[in-house]
Length: 189
Image 1 (cartoon, rainbow, N blue to C red):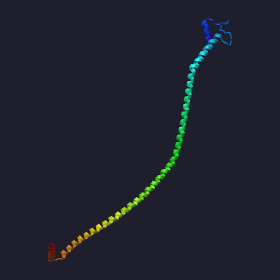
Image 2 (cartoon, helix red, strand yellow; image 1 turned 180 degrees about the vertical axis):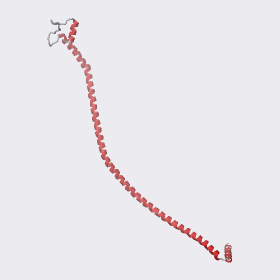
Image 3 (cartoon, rainbow, N blue to C red; image 1 turned 90 degrees about the vertical axis):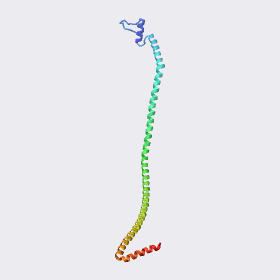
Image 4 (cartoon, rainbow, N blue to C red; image 1 turned 90 degrees about the horizontal axis):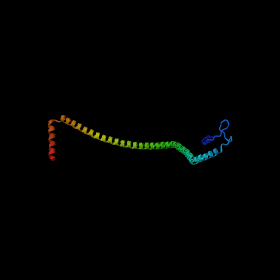
């Protein structure tokens, strides 16, 4: 006997007992008829309530769980695809780095050769200009030093001639020279 049936019979006041005082039923496997009716009705009500209230909630929670798992799988797939694309891009960029380095070195060599050629040409022009300027300076200095030397020689010659004349001339010849000079100057006026 189930607890429910015993509780109902105790409430009604009739509990079947055997000669030893034990509670008994009519059949060893089947419960009493009222137990089948009330138990079946209670089971139908409980299963109906479960079907109406719990089943939609369970379906919704399972659908949400499935959607969450699918989203995680999609996110993982997207992350993997992105990572593979970035890895391929890095690998290609690494290959491009070698090519880019070679291109930059070739450009640098070309620019260095061009700068070297331009520098040599500019240096040759500057050397030619400096040589021409130096030649002009040397010619100018030679001319100036020649003029200075002639002037110095003239001054020294005049001083030497004055001394020589003073030593060689007597006072009377000297006076005659001065008077002839004065006369020439006076005549020119």
